[in-house]
Length: 529
Image (cartoon, rainbow, N blue to C red; front, side):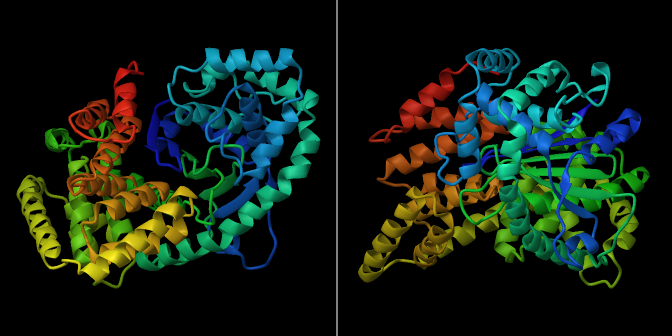
């Protein structure tokens, strides 16, 4: 089975792996497996007329996910394990399971180590989450399908279920689950109003009524034994399952969840009007030519169309000013989403209409014309020129007075302390105030890049790190760490060439880089995955 993979890596890591709906249709066994995904859980309902009563979304805890994640924590999954002050559930589980026999611990370690071909923990955990969703319930944790019928990514993990059964008994996971499950319920309650507001806002923009449809469902499951900010998403035909990791602060990864919800709404429309899509061939070369193209868009034309539309809808939902909208559209285009300008124009036209998006959709897709889209490079070049001119003008008109410089230093001092304490919510407005006074302040840009990354806005983080590096001046360490972190983001996105280029850029800098050069050398010396 082919997997459509969407991955994000930030200081709060995020990963989404989505099963291609077309592949699911070609593999009918997944229809029966879907029932297993939704069987072994504990539904949460606390009040009438909740969000579950308005749209197709469920909230649930899942003991299979808990058990598998507990097992890999014993086996060696240590992502963010050095900072568990904000995750008492994982801390408690790891402490309690430290008492299992050395024999079982060693066998778990050996399995985990011998079955890990991935270099990064963020990639390793994803296949175990998939594995968890394909198990039956405790205590045996039998597979819900024969090994040859499982997705390729989880087939190598066959046999882990027997170790899981042992851990369930020896580690007394049943009683431990009952002890920690209230925390999972509390996490669900924290998400419910946030998701309700997000969904209502999204449906309002699309002019779609909140309603229950029996053929499509979305399910949210807390995964508190994972790394901070991790989101795993799976969709099988019309049913979506999203697992959300813990957060260090009160902020939740709502942008990521909104993105998945937009897939939930738009994927079926793309599938329904698939025959209206233009031929992929003339677009392939244009996608390939983009300076920061993501490989997945080169390989999957339908995904490129879908993501082009979704990212433009997100910009409209964020109510971005024209200048910021242009920057985001250029960024999307250069990553290979070459229909972003078309959808931006089309959505502007949609907003002036009265019909719902699903009614507008046929003409939206049929309106794509190669003779127009083939000339978009000139439009993007002009936008980039305007963005550059505007940036210079803003820089020239925002010369800070001495008293302002004193205020800036105070704001930055407070913000940097908050960033060090991972209190991103309080740091953000202080940095925004600095940028209001001095739009090209490298330290503030660097801080905002960190916050954008923590909020899982990778595109914005890349742009802010680049701005910070360009304006670092004598603070050469800011340039060094900005290029290093850009390289780290590109590495996770699978763009090894741009990652290497960013890390190599660090080594061209002179001065006190505060460890950035050493980190870059280490990254460059790592073997390719």
